[in-house]
Image (cartoon, rainbow over all chains, first blue to last red; front, side, top):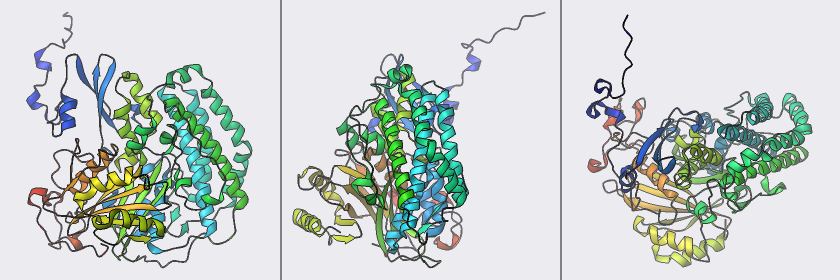
Length: 404
Length: 183
């Protein structure tokens, strides 16, 4: 009997010669200044590929890390794995059809990426949205914001090695998506907002679930947060990690919690009020540290404010129609409109151009995740490989929004 | 609509503007030549009366005849969004100065505009495709790039292969059925 010989990694028959590697070419042709700089490896540096199917990249993202030992020297995110060309599709569909194409952009908080285009179409058409519809938008939007932040907490803890928080936060998130499913009919891609209002009025199922949940949400959320906020392993890991200062945050066009965690009190709900937010009372939490822990804690503060807003919405909700009276076929006058909303990740905005037909001439969709992912390249150098995902997750990008 | 702000813009930029400052809803729009972008943005960002510290969006637009780059800015001095339209970028020379010297974050937005329209932002040190693969040859958001199932609009009135759209070097003013009346 012969003993099987173990194949050696030095066996030349096992190496693929470079000229046959094709699309797996390890070092692409440098086209730009930055690429030349990135792929110019100094002594002791090597490239490490992460993704596109890495479990903690929060979607399909590939990151090329330039490492020196255990330290990340530089990194280059490679996007486009989820690119669907929504802007082109939108130019070829009519104004009503577009809304359903927008949902999967931001699949964690899809009401917000419906909201800003719908608002800009309303501006193009000069439509006044009924007040009840505006209140319903704010109410469902804030619920969606909490659901999104809950996912963030659970996922962030998971990226730092904790299993329990995601189970806790998913209990809350599940309750909210069930609630939203009762009025929108879907748990993830709601397709609920319409040009001139919302798809359906609040129903009994939704209201009874919401009432139940609101009575215990405050205490339950605090309990869930206590699990992490006072966890020494988590806090010591996240504190001082990936510090983003005020000037850099503004220069990098960061928005939302990531900007506010660096001490800039910029929230579009207050900076450029829309919908019925001027009538509601809430604070804009800010923090000064700008590290991963601050970004995490800031989202916790936001959840508390969202609960306040939901409470006020329920008390101030007026009666009336939930849709404006509109023709079936919408043909706005030629013109341009821009609108922005504050989502759980930052500014979602939309620039719509109309040429007088029933399809937009141009629809530009701006997503905050795109710009926050760009920040990773700035925050990473000098940190350890294991911190890549910790920093990236604290910025909370969603790849559906990044890739459009 | 902030009328005082419109007067301020007209006073500050005077002859740099290529058209009237327009206002609608909560937006103020000014039009400039692409070459004036760095100077105008610098003034908007640094002037203590303007203080536009926050770049909301950067978008490329194909009007069917030429290109535009549209910036949206926010400042504490006005409740309006400011829209700066850099107008009249020719199809055969789609070049415009980059604003990454003010907002580093615009780098990826400019890469996206390059990827989708072939706009060359001079001064952007990482101008390569961002969504589409490096060997993709055409620019899909241009109006002369027709979707394969968009038979009614393609010049031949039939299906056109996706990769046939002209590259920037030989991009002449081709037939574009749907030109902008929205300009």
